[in-house]
Image (cartoon, rainbow, N blue to C red; front, side, top):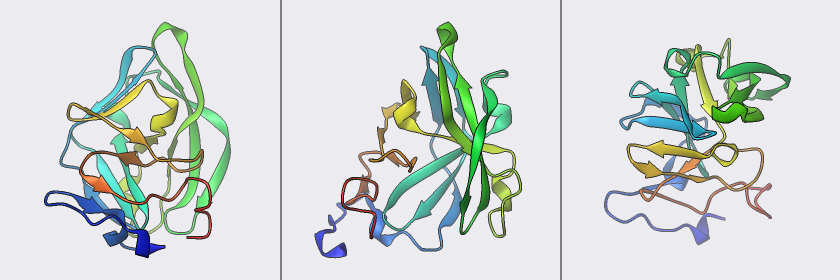
Length: 165
């Protein structure tokens, strides 16, 4: 698969240079999430997780999410690296709800403990997700929640025919 890899230009990152297991690092850009025309998360204290073939996933401290915007959703999943994921319904302006549109690791496995108390949002299920003032493009597919920006190149896992990567 990596033979179709897009070479990064200066100032870009290739998702094929990201590690496996994933790397956790502080985000350097402001993260904003909008649903129903309302900003429901705004943070300069987010983390990003970088994993081979995936655009970064951003995790916002729960304190930087509008109070009342998250309610527990049914279901859970398991990440082989981070542990058990909890899902959240996101409530935005005008009473708009996006079921299971965010997730968190309440008790993440080592070395991802810093993600405790943080939540990630599926950009495809929000009105908009922004890094600084750039609106992100959602990672393809309905399972992954990566944020694609002009400084990230792929190809990206998640679209048709990519399950075997």
